[in-house]
Amino acid sequence: MPPASTDTTRERIIDAAEECFARFGVAKTTVEDIAAAAKLSRATVYRSVTGGRDELILAVVLRDLGRFLDRLAERLRTGRSVAEAVVEGTMDAIAYVRERPATAAFLVPESAGHMQAAVARSAEHVLAVCCDQVRPHFEAAQRRRLLRADIEVEGTVEFLFRIITSLIVLDRDREPAALRRFLRTYVVPVITGP
Image (cartoon, rainbow, N blue to C red; front, side, top):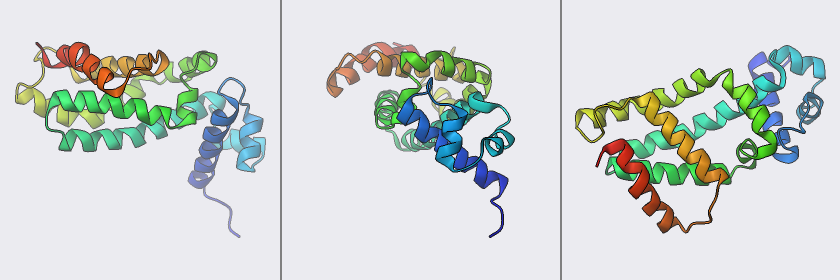
């Protein structure tokens, strides 16, 4: 049997990291755990992922972010209004994270330092990935005067990311209708104007 390609090995390692982060938590997962889950040696993991655990944390986050952004882009293409896209996109993001233990594990307090360290070094890359997906829809909405003229896509994406994260971490157990009212009342006007 021919040796696995570098890309295949890397994906196998990222899959194993995602599984381990969900099972053990981010703070307690070691490279040894990931190597065992991937059925690879530690040396192979370190050769494939030269940035170690921090690189794996970021790789898992970026892969999951890409999955979510694909869904968001579809919603933006088919949404009836900016308000609906903001409200339902936020609702989707919250549900998406809650349904994925590996993603949700990054938001618990015990992993915050690990997540922050890994993502802080690549924050511009994460923001750029989000902005690239949203930018065409954002610019089209601004041309149609559906968004405030004085806001930029980068700031808006960061704002929404912070809102979504806080709604996940500080879950007040609101019913979906109440959460939608909250978003329409407090979040949508920041983006669309009064």
